[in-house]
Image (cartoon, rainbow, N blue to C red; front, side):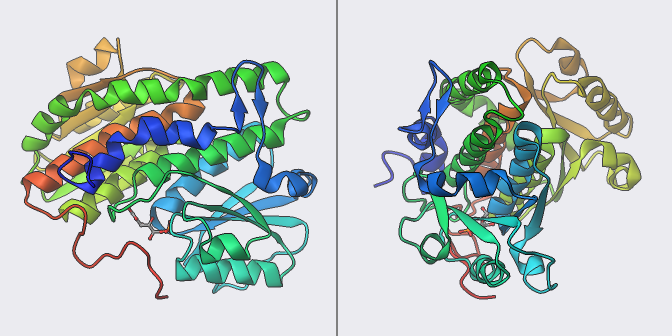
Amino acid sequence: EKGGFEHFMLKEIFEQPVTMQEVMRGRVRHEDGFVRLGGIEDYLDRIRDARRIVICACGTSWHAGLIGEYLLEEFARIPVEVDYASEFRYRNPILDEHDVVIVISQSGETADTLAALRLAKEKGALVVGICNVVGSTIARETHCGMYTHAGPEIGVASTKAFTAQVIVLYLLSLVLSKDRSLSRHDISLYLRELGEVPEKVSRILELNDQILEIAREYVDSRNCLYLGRGYNFPVALEGALKLKEISYIHAEGYPAAEMKHGPIALIDKDMPVVFIAPQDATHGKILSNVEEVRSRKGRVIAVANEGDEEIARLADHVIYIPSAAAPVTPLLNVIPLQMLSYHIATLRGCNVDRPRNLAKSVTVE
Ligand code: F6R
């Protein structure tokens, strides 16, 4: 049942080139820039006319929501707010029929997300679901929605469901941008970038042995910092969550530029820092952050693009991955972070599929 893998988590990490294709199947025609999301078709005008989109979710799904904020604002130019479902529901949110609420949930059963959905409906908002489990409570109670089609996720740490959620948000952002903020040409360009992702992920998965070797050096760490910017700030949060939940090492994710505003005080030889450093507009800034960490004896693991020699001079380890357009980079950068967490946790003897104190579906509030 684990398809030859030692754990469900590893199987699910390695399934991603296939599950990513599944999300796009029947929805995307790469040749001519065509996207269709059947589940929301009847509500498309209302979503396009939204005064604001509010995304509600918990945990990893909330991280997908943060990436969704960047995607929706950049492609569709609709203002977006992202909230933890548990915070949203208890603060009497300002919401009416001009708002659209998107709830994201792998299980479709998370108690706080379900309560947020019900509250949003009560206040007259249109509620759109992004769920993995077909027929789940959240999927049934939303006005409309899209399934992530990632297949059953057994490992408690979410991996393939996360990348599927991000792809759905990417497609949604493109659909909403049509005839408004993006030209047909731009849309087909972004679809082509997305179409290349599964193959690039396969290439990243080939780095498994290298990542295992890096993991060996950090097995005894007690803390770890993850830094990224823009589209990859939420990836830093997700990398840190993956590490803490399965290896029990304390980890924090931060926007890289915020390092100077506090976390830098923590840096010493015992504080590994994982940098997500794709070659984009902020690359130079990230390099100077790496230098700052190095000069305080911090150890640096960088996820960077093939051909980036500058970073190799500064970092202790570089995981080289294929480059891509900024909006698809979270789908690539998260993969080595999933693998790194998996290896550190298994080397520490942790049960990665069933970490202590965690449940796959959190049905208590
Ligand atoms: C992290 C993880 C949790 C879930 C969260 C929401 O790996 O699995 O943080 O993401 O409990 O669950 P869903 O998406 O089922 O609502």
